[in-house]
Image (cartoon, rainbow, N blue to C red; front, side, top):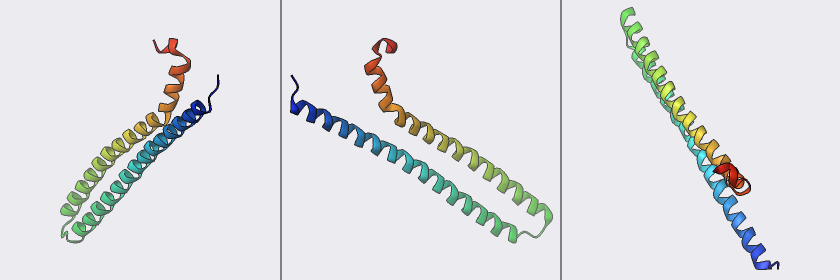
Length: 113
């Protein structure tokens, strides 16, 4: 027999699940935005530091050395931050598809074994 309380409890469970899922996705997006912001800030500061260093250089050799050092640092920062951001996107994708994993497990229990 169908009970109104059962239907209400089911709706409440679904609502709480949806809110929890939306919150985890929002946290994932926030982490990605924060990582991009950190990278942009660090890149700006490194560029500013390089420009200041370059303006005080008196010889071509020192200018080339400063430019080479800046290029190396910029590349290393780009690679490490790109890997970090890619990992955050991977985590976000896992979070986005987590509800589907539960649904698939419910409807296809034989496939899970």
